[in-house]
Structures are given as structure tokens and as C-alpha cells.
Image (cartoon, rainbow, N blue to C red; front, side, top):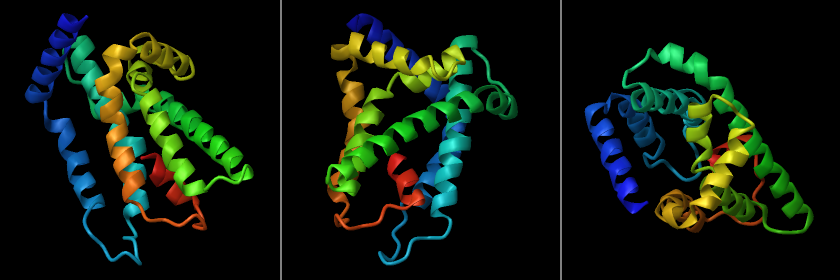
Length: 195
């Protein structure tokens, strides 16, 4: 299995090196999202840019690389968006609702909401390592969730480095945020916590 992993990793690296263009726009927008601002005010474009990245740019990038990997060709961004967007959006909605429901249960139990959302988002990020690629490979939304979790559990030792990579940004965000337990979590903050 390790030999197979090295082969896939090498192939993925070659595909990324040969086709870096889909990564340029999210890299620019990502840098804009993390530019330092005054702590008491957030930039007005923060939420719309986050939603643009999450619901428009990411599905197109995923779809473009899936096209390159499975069919060895690029496809138009419009066609990729039209083909994959609904499935991607439904899976994001299901995972986001799961996060919301678990957070509400935690709130009813008296747990600190902000920290709970961050921890649950980290767990969902780890669980979804295989879910999103399967959404694009199978072109199915609901069936990709249990299959992705089954792939993760079935390949736990092999997936450990991916789990760490998925968890590190969320954990850094969790430990670096200084939000009190009394902070009101609005819909934009909820959506941004899931990014």
C-alpha cells in the first residue's frame, strides 16, 4: 500500500506542477482574506469572498483536477460548475447542518458554543477527507458521505498524514482565536468557522 501511495503522490504532484492555473485565483483570494485588519472591524467583503471560495471556486478546482486525473483533459469551468456544483453544495449543506445540530445540542448541554463549533468543524474536516473527492468521482452527494467515512475508517493508518493535514489549520484557528464563551455566533461566523 505504501508503494501505491508513493505512486499516487508522485502522479498528483506531477499533475499539480503541470496544471497550476486553477490554484492561482483561490491563492489570491485566500491571501486577501488573511490580510491584517483592525480587530474591531472586519472587512465588508470577508463573508462574500469566503462564500465565493467555498461554493464557487472550490468545486470548480476540485472538478478540474478530477477531470485531469480521470480523463487526462481540462474541461471548461462552466461545464465543471454545472456538472458538480449541486452535489458539492448538497454535501456542504449536509455537513454544515450536522455541525449546526451538534452545536445546538452542545449549547443545550451548556457547553461553550464557539469552542464546540471549532472542535466539531475540525472533526468534520477530518471525516470529510474522502467525501469531497468522492462527490466529484461518483457525481453523487448523499452516497458519498458514508462511503467517504468508510474509506477513512478502512484506511486509517494510511490516512493518518491526511488527517493531520486536515486538522492542523483548524486546530491552529481553534487555539489562536480569543473568543469568549458569551460571543454570539451569527450565521456569517458559523459559515466562516466551517471554512
